[in-house]
Image (tube, rainbow, N blue to C red):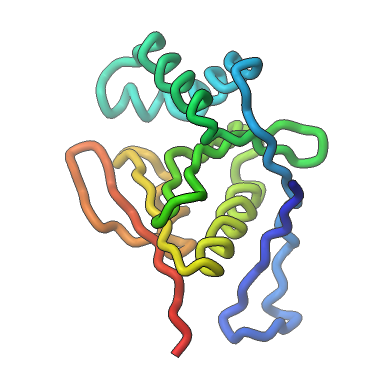
Length: 172
């Protein structure tokens, strides 16, 4: 499945001064148990520091069990740009609201527009079916600013996490 993320402009029309570099084209492919080591290494590279800052330790066995459960639930897609695997999306796109459990991008592929492209496509899908999108982000994770920038609002705070929600714009 190939996706192209649409870019919005504040005025609704594209002016030369509004142009941004095009968002990357990406594909989502099912991530299967064969890819377990990649999935674990990706999670560790992107989340270990945040988990240790939050809870003081990284529990490899617990993380591996959780990742195995997610793959078994068939909620995990591998994100590819061209032939390069760049991350993973853990998401239940078949429920309302759509729930994003995790968006992992390998550190060398962060801040390249890939997350914006993936989330832009997901938000366009949610908007087309009239669904909210929810997610949780650790308080120490700077990704909260990214989610706020694309329209998510904090709906609840706990000692460790922010619950966030994006709502489609209702045409009036």
